[in-house]
Length: 93
Image (cartoon, rainbow, N blue to C red; front, side, top):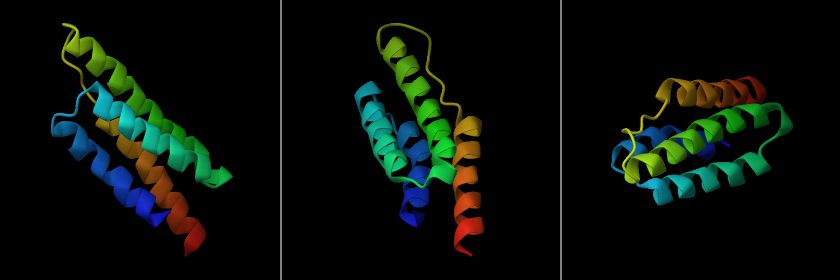
């Protein structure tokens, strides 16, 4: 799971590098896959991270179709990743 935390920590940077809605969907798919393999005690945190990315993907798709500029809720996302990090620290130390 430590590699999950590293990968999840890079998501905001990847999104800022100009990902389009398809790229974001791919990131969401990866988080979903990792969440399905995560221990039960941390599943809700993965769901929170996934939800933040999925919300951004929907907003980005609207932006690509002439809607308002999409904004990623990094605060909400970071809180979910921090909860995963805390769970990992508390469980594995």
